[in-house]
Image (cartoon, rainbow, N blue to C red; front, side, top):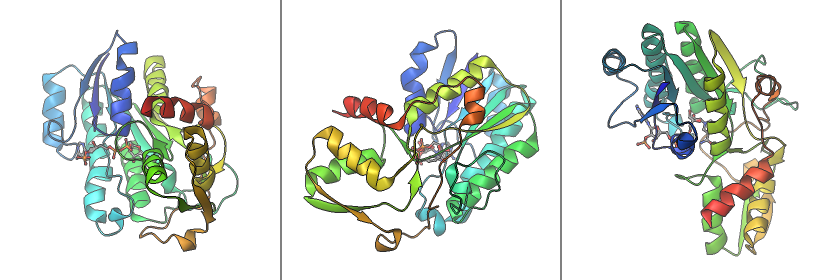
Length: 282
Ligand SMILES: NC(=O)c1ccc[n+]([C@@H]2O[C@H](COP(=O)([O-])OP(=O)(O)OC[C@H]3O[C@@H](n4cnc5c(N)ncnc54)[C@H](OP(=O)(O)O)[C@@H]3O)[C@@H](O)[C@H]2O)c1
């Protein structure tokens, strides 16, 4: 397969670059904003005409959750128009599309792991644009998969794990919220899941949930990062109201992974994957 990867300089894009050598029968074309701006439909259509592309993996997104509250139109251009353009370009070229979405499409009021069939109700601008992006991909039709993921971290770019490691060196005491419950996702695991689905093949539209396995709070995640890294810091459990942010986050956004597991995709346990990432960050 010839696979076009958009947004390849982000966390997920870099993780796909990292594992791509394990898929030698495929040619990967890694692009980011300067080469392929996903908001430019004409550019995408020309690119698909001039090259034989069998699949697109869209890792490009507007991911600044708080900033999106004041910049919803810009976020929508990237998170809605972008995936719609990719779906159109892929459909016209008979190529498959894998697009990534988020647990923030839910309102977080549930207390059971969320299924693909559960009602969406985003509570912030980022989640609203990501939900509209899912709908746009489905409406275009064609062969596409949307994978919702959550709490993404990796050895690349900025993320919670890297922030905790930095703060752990700078501070002797800090607080992290314990009333937002979910599951982290190591971007390498998501990259493998995407390649697995592409390699197995698919047709039509399918929505999947993928995160690592298990259920924790951000406090538990921080505590484990510090413990595994030998960082001695006093960690206080905060309520979300004690850590105000511009965008409200869902209180409970554990994803149910039954559907993707039935499709044969592996879902590693969050702590096992965290250990792997921390090893690489040493
Ligand atoms: N991060 C999380 O915790 C999380 C949680 C759930 C779901 N997700 C979803 O997972 C996916 C991957 O997230 P990530 O954390 O890997 O994102 P990321 O690190 O923010 O990377 C996104 C990449 O897309 C690029 N980009 C932005 N606008 C673009 C455009 N118009 N055309 C082409 N590229 C563009 C960005 O470039 P610039 O840096 O130059 O803007 C960046 O390199 C996204 O769909 C995200 O919504 C993320």
